[in-house]
Image (cartoon, rainbow, N blue to C red; front, side):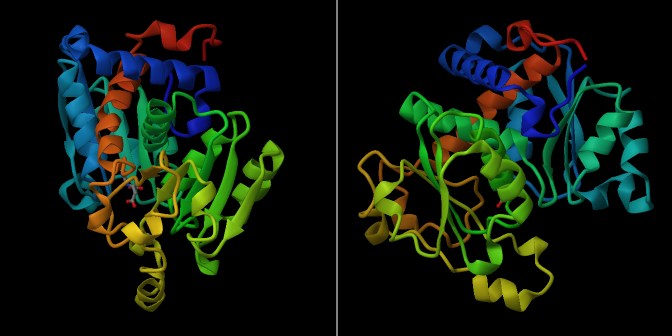
Length: 314
Ligand code: NCD
């Protein structure tokens, strides 16, 4: 049985095969519409979500399966003090696969240790968000045809943004990737990610404090929201929240085929006037999330053995 807790739980080859399966589903969704007949996905969300939870549910329904779950900790027995370990042991008898979002880093990993069914990390605190990364990779691949060689600028809250951490972890495995980290001083990429992930990869990276100075060289601009819920005080949030706002004027500095991405929700980071620019990919990116989650559910349920080709049984 496999779980997806960290992007590196998938090898690069498995990641690429999952993306290919997602593209296949996108091209002929009807061929997969009964693939999960009789299967149940449990969505255990202890933290707010719109896209991730709904796209998981949509993915399972589009595969012919059903879903159950809760959308906040207050509506679950967590409010009575139940542990994640106990909840997941019980849910193992109610469903065939679990997607879990939790405000505590590591909670889905704990769940996986007690679960009898595959567990997917749908975001754990400021740590990782591997299915958003699959969504992001699919979006880059569909736009450019290839992820290798990409020059990507990650902008905003690079300290607390789990989508950023997971995307960096996955991207370093591709060839000739260059990173530009654009953030306020206080929200820089955590030191451990630079030291343990970026530097050992040998890929060039640099840090910038304005978008304007780097925009002309980017293939992808990945905007992020300042993660208010991870701040210790409101004053710091208010001071930093509007540090970077992409406007049509700034976008005019970008390449003609720049891909502007954002995991969403956006607050102020991208002016609505940018939405109609053909380079704005964030709503397509959100839609791609359904197809990667369909592919992942199939793979983890053992219904897409081609994804695991050559993998050692674990
Ligand atoms: C992201 C998350 O939850 O980390 N949202 C998402 O899943 N698409 C980004 C965010 O909340 O800023």
